[in-house]
Image (tube, helix red, strand yellow):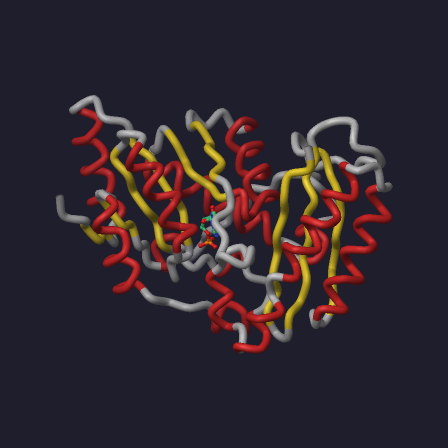
Length: 281
Ligand code: AMP
């Protein structure tokens, strides 16, 4: 099977209509490209589920907080296509920005208070951008299933809530975070780390793991999170925006480990902002 690169919505829609006529299911894996093994795990799992798979590549300007981050975001479409073809992906949908946000575009999808105080606090407007583009991609692809990584745990919850609240007939599936051997969560932004920063980066995940162990052993979550914050800075991170334990189900604040939880963190390493999260249960 040949993987097709589709840039026009009309072409995507007629392919999807043909698949549906055959009774096939459709899955979408939204990405911003610069694909790594984390993205490929999502796409591979989607293909294995038996659906026709559309991977979207769109660097969504509405979800960036700084023009610099948007300008520096890696764009590697040709390499991305080569990585997706062997997995069995049917279509790589690469819409033009002008088609996604035509003149007069006026709608924002905004999901309130899912895990407030985490990414939303440090990236104002980010999840409006995410919810809006994902709602659009779900409408464009008419997917039955949509795959998202737990790497962006709050995003996964925002998308789930949005799809439920808007009665979008899609199943949102979360996939575990893929990591390098030293624990660093794979991310397109890792490519921007210097060799020295790359050697420091696994400290973020190591600190979270140690904090989770301490909490399970009986430490107060705030104390364990504080210790993790210090550890991250001592390792060489410039600053830690948040390290917090929240409920896994709704990302609500919690003081004691009385239900499945998630430890989440964001920290700056030089000019690169890294996020990570792990289960505590
Ligand atoms: P992005 O291109 O960064 O917007 O990511 C596209 C999708 O891939 C999102 O659902 C991410 O959560 C997911 N993803 C990114 N990195 C990883 C990873 N290391 N493991 C699993 N999923 C990931």
